Image 1 (cartoon, rainbow, N blue to C red):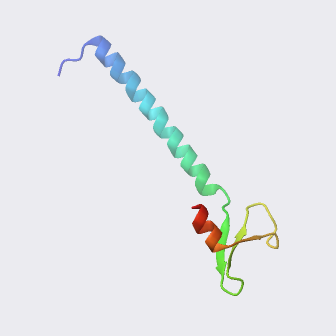
Image 2: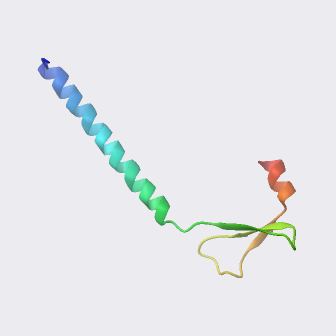
Length: 73
């Protein structure tokens, strides 16, 4: 296969951009995996979803009515 100089240069630039993009995606996915996440569970006794946010105490939670969540989804 013959590669003209301008085509080779262009291909190398495209390859570099895709390589940088791939590295950025890998970094962002790693950040998401390490991030603390919300916890949600359904409390049958209360009939509500119990939500705890990261960085808050375990006692600090709020309730969501499942019907409201369905209507707003």
